[in-house]
Figure 1 (tube, rainbow, N blue to C red):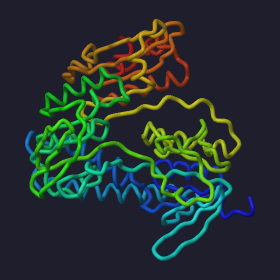
Figure 2 (cartoon, one colour):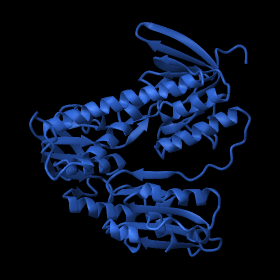
Figure 3 (spheres, rainbow, N blue to C red):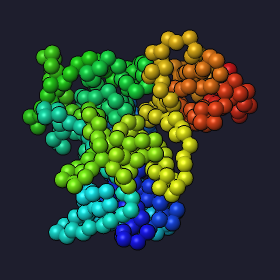
Figure 4 (cartoon, rainbow, N blue to C red):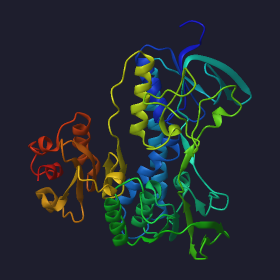
Length: 438
């Protein structure tokens, strides 16, 4: 492939970019990955890894706030995990001879990328370019962090103490996970969202069960309330709703969603189409409207999950290599509270569909011996089955190990295994998966 520096230039060092670069290198493509952040990207240094470390620490916390030494240890642990993760991913890229380029990337045209670092700039070219620049937190003019008393997820790794009280703005995955973590670490937690429920992408019944569990822990909620502004005087944070309600707390936490990071397209001679939300538009194998340019991961829109990023990055490389990827499997989306909530397939739509061709099967986890041994109460598995073919259309679970519980369901969906055949499988006894056989 003469005439280009690389067969493939990948922009972004997060899950999508790393997966695309690794797959490309393994396919024998001469590949470069460009990232302004250390390898691992925002997932490692701003969102996914720090939040999951917080959740893990919260699971071991008592009913009172951890002392400062506890957070000092947690900060050190997060830094250690970040360094280890970056080292692991760098070795993964090196093993397939991917060149790592540190700097800010800008797309010039379908084959050309400029990379700026410090006072230096260079141009690289690729026969194919993969945009995997990810997403960044979405804030609003008067509802944004100050990094001191009003914080966002990235600031938790620098906290020196657990807040006595905190108001969370946002009822999506991030807000819910951190609400659970802060409460378990001893904070008084109040969560405000402008919609009438938590977790709009999942089954309302599962979301309601998680809400009840959080309420049992002591988290309080305000639904259907738009936050107009969040302000701090250095000691107290005031969260002011559009209806005039004021919520005072020691800290505020902003988790109002994410938006695509498409700054690399600014000033480009030509760039791919984006939709009304700013997400890059792609087809089923990641092709954009600009020939030779592909996109994967958060920058193309929900679900904003690492497993979805991995899947479509692999599909891109297969397509560039001349293969024809099959249909994309359904993706498990998870909320890593304790207990977990997870779903696979379009469960929010299925839950509101009263069509006669879909049957809902509900099983309480307490019906299994494993559930009784572990004292489960409130855990549930819900599966939507095609009434004509028996095929599984989607499923959701709430309870311990919900993510792992859905793995065999996901596999059955991918390979068109009817529910009754899955139900006939003799899983280990006792085990959570036995709920599938009831």
